[in-house]
Amino acid sequence: MYKKMLLGLLAVAAFLPLPFVASQAQAQHSASRAEEARIDGFDVRPVRQAAAGRELEFTLYGSPGGSAAVSISGATGSVVLAETETGVYEGTYTIRQRDKITAQSTATANLRVGNQVASAILDEPLIGRANARRSGDGQRYGAGPKIERFEVGDPPANLVPGEDLNLILSGTPGGTASATIVGVKGKILLNETRSGVYEGTHIIKHRDRVSANSTVTGILRVGDRETSAVLGQSLVAAAGQPPRARQVARRCVDCGVIEAINLVEVKGEGSYLGKIAGGLAGIVIGNQIGEGNTKTVAQVVGAAGGAYAGNEIEKRIKTAKHYEVVVRLENGGTQTITYAAQPPFAVGAKVKVDGGTLTVLQ
Image: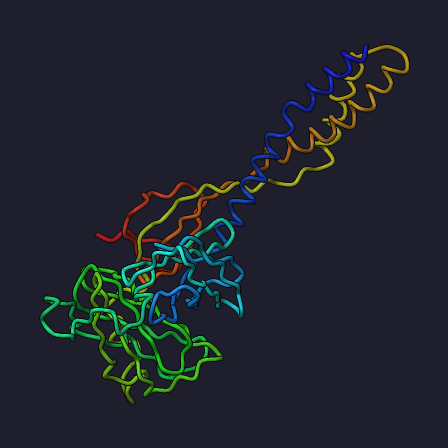
């Protein structure tokens, strides 16, 4: 008797989790897409000697609300960075007796935000710069990296919070580049967007103390050698110069590469009609189970389960689908374009974002 009742309930419940699980997975997927892990800068206060007891102080700048850690080659431990202020993570590693940290040791930072992880490799030695080989130290180390040009692209009219400072460094390809600005805490990473061209953006913050004539230093490191150059222009556009003229001519700010194409399902709302239809079906199933009081209980349970099932089935029928195309822009940011039907694009295609639509570039 009870076995028949149990089988009936299992038959009703068998198809219920399907829309539920799919919807939950889509919700989690949509939430993860909304979060972005980004590292804007990674810095260290080097030590003069890698002696036991000395401390390496790390600072990472990036997306707020994440968890950050640094691993060091040659070290027997790692260091967790705490978010001391919005988007700024700091931590200290104390060198141990058994550590084998040298001037060639590398440090890698990982920043996790939600389900996304961003990584960055420190572009300077952990041991004091006096021990690092610079390209200007003479010819005994051979030819070092060269910086051919260092400039600010598309200079803004005013240095106000929220404004972008786009730095462009051209030189030896295959290296790592960064920049520092007097009045700005930390370091700005410059990514090699094409061979020998490194670009990065700093968004001016309220805490920055930057002026049009602040000293900006670009650093290019290739292997264990590095060189530097000081910006030779103002950080703001010259009087009478159109702020966007140079940038438009040099780089397409709305161009990028398709990083992902995601199918998103949004479950609709059920109505009382679905509940009634499902409840009647549940009563029919419950009526086939047991006798007497047991049959009555089975009918009630079947009605409740059937109403829930009918509601869920109606939601599934009303499920709406659309596609989200994620574009990684040339400036490092992302933009998502939504399409009602499957778009005629492929991951990796070069496109331009224009008024909420995408155009494939040749």
